[in-house]
Structure formats: structure tokens, C-alpha cells
Image 1 (cartoon, rainbow, N blue to C red):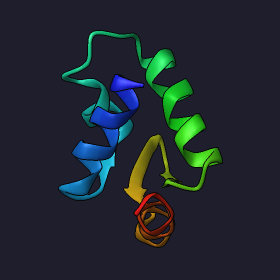
Image 2: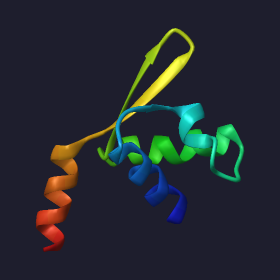
Image 3: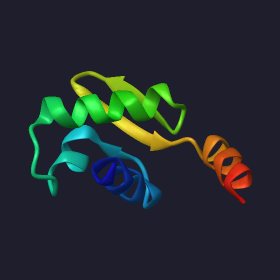
Length: 71
């Protein structure tokens, strides 16, 4: 999914809020949240909510496992 790959690429630069991730995308915030939920369920992304802000970070250990398996 291109949108999810873009989200992963964005998070490679560092943690970001859901609204920061959604800003360059041409989709609604609920749609972005659904994509993030899929990434979180797969273990590729972790989210943390503080107040009203949900911050996303990559899960490098999971990405390493996937890279090793693909390689």
C-alpha cells in the first residue's frame, strides 16, 4: 500500500503525530488513523496518546525482522 509506505518513510525521520503524518496525504484523518491501526497491528509502528495528541514511532526491531526475512 503506497500510503502506508509513505507513512513508514515519514516515521523513519523520527516520531510524528497523526496530524503531521496526515498533512501531506490526500485522505481524511479517519482514513489515516485506519492505516496507522493496520501498521500498529502488524507491529511496525507504536503509538502513544498524551492528552489529545497521538504520536507514532517506528518499531525498528520488527522492521529488522522483516528485512532479514526478505533478504
